[in-house]
Structure formats: structure tokens, C-alpha cells
Amino acid sequence: MTNGEILERQQGDSVMDRPYLEASIEDLEKIVKENVNNRTILAKIREELGFRTTRRAKQLRREVDAVLRGEVPRPPKPPRPDRPDDQLSLIG
Image (tube, rainbow, N blue to C red; front, side, top):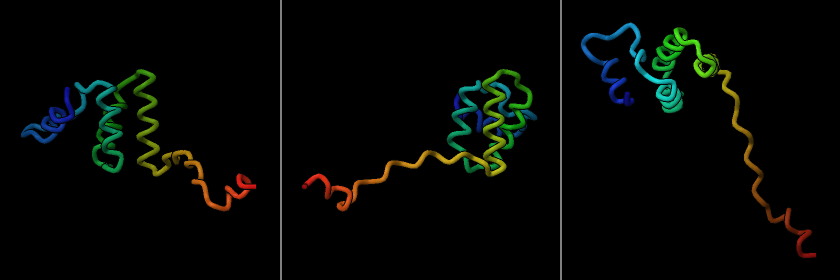
């Protein structure tokens, strides 16, 4: 099921109680990644994950919960770029 099909199902005339029922865990992971700032979609996915029992689904639910609570871990800091004063030892 593609993201477009899932969104169509959500936006159709008869909105299902579980719009992500037929979505695979891979689909859900991708949708979460693409909609990390869309609390409405994340809440619907969180609800769907409540019906799933696999380790992967439970992990994704924890991640969605963290995003919704604003507790998303920060990515690691990138290395500091070289500055001219860092390179004085090279000419000496």
C-alpha cells in the first residue's frame, strides 16, 4: 500500500476507524519519518500501533510517543569544521 493510497483512504467519504490498518510496518516507519512535524498523522499512527504486537511496532510506538511528547533525541553533533587557528601546528 502506497502513502498516496493510505492518504486517499483517510480522506475518502467513509473514513475508517483504522486508516492505517492495511499499512505495513515499513509503510508506517516511512510515514512517521516523512511526517515528524504532523501531530495529527503521528497520533493516528500511534493509535494504529496500539493494535500491533511485534517488537518493531512497539519500538515505533515508543518513538512516536517521544516525538509527540517533544522528547526526540537530538542527532549527534557534527564534527567541528577546521579553523585557521587549528592549523598553526601544521606549519611549524
